[in-house]
Image (cartoon, rainbow, N blue to C red; front, side, top):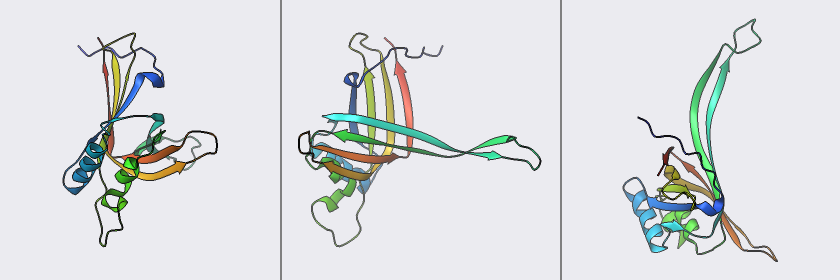
Length: 169
């Protein structure tokens, strides 16, 4: 019998973001070095996490027909952003890999990792929803330093694929 879906509501205070190395070879090694060296397994001070999954849908129109006769599924893209009220260079290192410390004389591997978003309401312990992004690579990093507000770093990412899960107590 399949598990019943989760029907609880959540806020950002119920969530957490975890990173782990993914893949194999130099991309995994680069992520492992940054994640473990900066204690990023559980990412702190995170705000405004977005995940977007899109599928390219193409309508097929027949001559003489105004409505499409078929919708064809195309490529699926997984992307998103995170904001962080903390600055230690870890996210920039996940973007640049070994190039974050100095300009290398050759090409380098960009780190690849998994990103796991968990939400669990304290009022319903053991009931949680999880979104796991696999093969994540950062594509953009930014720093905002306003005059009277918190210094924020942000990153945009893409992932190879996404999996979801619900657990009910």
